Image (spheres, helix red, strand yellow):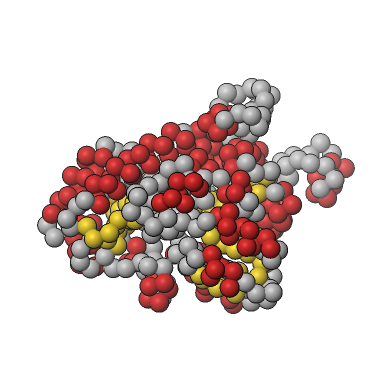
Length: 394
Ligand SMILES: *Cc1c(COP(=O)(O)O)cnc(C)c1O
């Protein structure tokens, strides 16, 4: 078997890449639930610890099931290497701790996942790492925010929850003129819809908790890119410890096998739902990159294979009306998670973005009338009927 052949299509790599069969020749990937690994003799133990010999030592460093997941995700992202982490946030933390030092500076999009915003905006400054937040659709603002000590551009595209699109190639060309690395959180699109490394980005990161698992079961994260950079993340990770568990890696391997069909089906349903919402009399605005009314629709068409599966919309009204729609739903799950086969509904201003300051919320455009739907695999008509109950009562 040659599971990693580069000429294989994404759907083939998603099912096959990264598997190393054991002496038992298992068909499904083996799950290695072991914290440590045994050496043949003292000399081998010394060689493994010093790094002179490759091989597993301890599952905080490497584990074969985790390695298989890393190899599969690397193949999908077109990356030389990948390092898996315990969650998406630990991927971001590890990346910043590995690549930045006190005194360094980051430029980031202002419309960020809430915890990322807190990590970069509130926690990292205590360690001397400052972040400037800019409108991710405004390339001139990114350029203007660069300082001599700027180390990273950090961007999420499409953004959460407003699905603003950053022009990855344009930001890469600005960053690289100043020796700044570009990091893309590819959580919303996954490599099935968007491959940032192909557009020149230096690193891609994931909350594997979302679409890579796809069924809301486990937490996980990853950083993928050239080995020179992922090795630095790995050195932090093996010492500090936010490593992916073997069990979660095994679940995620299985998630990757259905990633393409899920992303295609969920995106198609999201487009239908967005079109329905856009013509609804109780809906004020719809944010979905697959709609011609989206301000970066043309950019999304060139950068992404489809609009993705996240649809946000503003109801006519404010918090009270938005909550009324949420509370009328019997099918959609009221939960902040996304990327699941079960459709989820969130009021970002009071949940995912509830702990950032009102100013940060305003900068991110997270208003009180806004709802976010992460479209799953149910029939669109059932989703529409569920939302209609609340919307028609407004
Ligand atoms: C969920 C999420 C994260 C954080 O991932 P966890 O696995 O929850 O730690 C980071 N970025 C984006 C865009 C997310 O949606």
